[in-house]
Length: 120
Image (cartoon, rainbow, N blue to C red; front, top):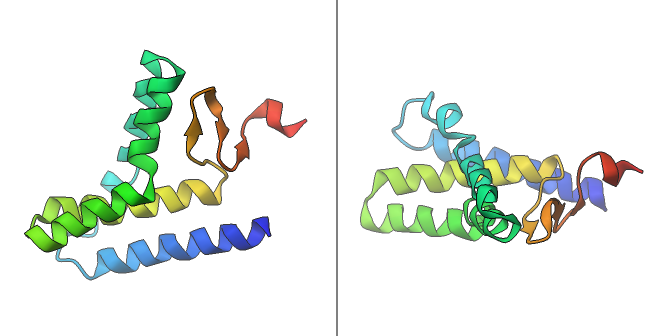
């Protein structure tokens, strides 16, 4: 089942790239912004709970959909772009096992524990 979920996430990454191709933005915007959601890791400077909240806000697909919807409905192209790219980034992360974080630490995600200690 795990491989099927990874295939599903890869398909959503492809959907994100396709949706981006339908916009009028130059191609270089997608790779330029692709890792922007990882700025949420800086939240861990405030502790595990703050870090998880910041990380999850920028990696939750619901946030991406809200950004896209606001951009599409209000004509705010920057929100539309961020929604598409953040959606793709979240799918990319999930393909590699990086899920939404629990407040107990960066290694603990909704997809299971990540890192060296998880490989035991």
